[in-house]
View 1 (cartoon, one colour):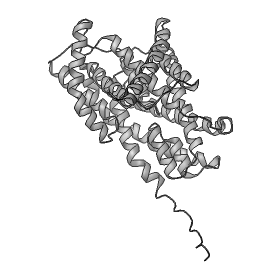
View 2: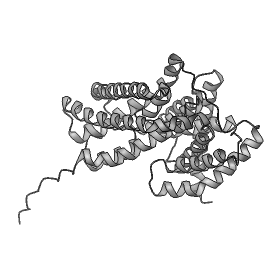
View 3: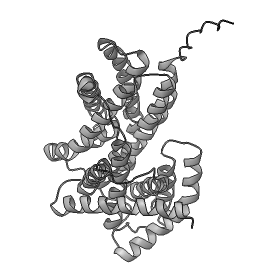
View 4: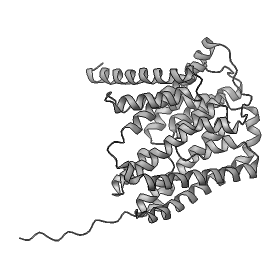
Length: 355
């Protein structure tokens, strides 16, 4: 192993140790989603204070692949009955996306933002892709990043409070049952190894959520067909929460030196718009289908893809439903983005230099 690779592994292990400490403390005190939120806060603060960090693609693949396996385990026979109603909720979710982007475009005009900046600020999720597109099209990156960061933190940090206030009982029977930590760990490892190669392939092809699709497919086939009915240990799920928290903390700790106060008024308006549209369309979808409000809200949540899936798994809020809607919306964003943005404006012609 080269010195640079060894150093990279050491950096990841240090961040995971910080995340485990932060997540462990909140889990011990019984804080809802403590492993995820504790790891996010601890790693984010540590990086801000100077702890060395770098991109962690393998940890991200591990986290997404594991999430797919957990979702497959929690797909219940009762969930099959609601599948027939999913086209309705998918149509409402996509309508919410279109409404959000159109409203965002016109809201941005009120603050003097360009069309590109307004549309990119309103996009729910895909922050890294949005940042690249914003740089390419010369949009106002600070405005866009503040909108995404503020919305993300409100979504994740308010999720425990929303769940406690609504108090909806979303637990459902599952294909997988607890057979103890040893059998559960072996079962998880077998699914993980089978799904690893297709997960890496899909990830390299740039498919949104590729590893999670591979894990979900392997887990659903195995548990749905009766080949396996063992549930993964809860400790593995908590570690996946910590890994997600570390990754999310790293992503948003890189947003530095932004004029937050100057842009906060516009960012708050954009966040209020996205949350209002999400709640309104979630209520509409529930009225049309009778599916629980919490699963629909998580499925429609504007951003925090990995966090919303983790939350749905943690509280058994029909995670396959949430995952399906979030993934389809990501694909829809990829296709809608160029349509709404249009062709980039060419740079002005420069006068020919004088001889």
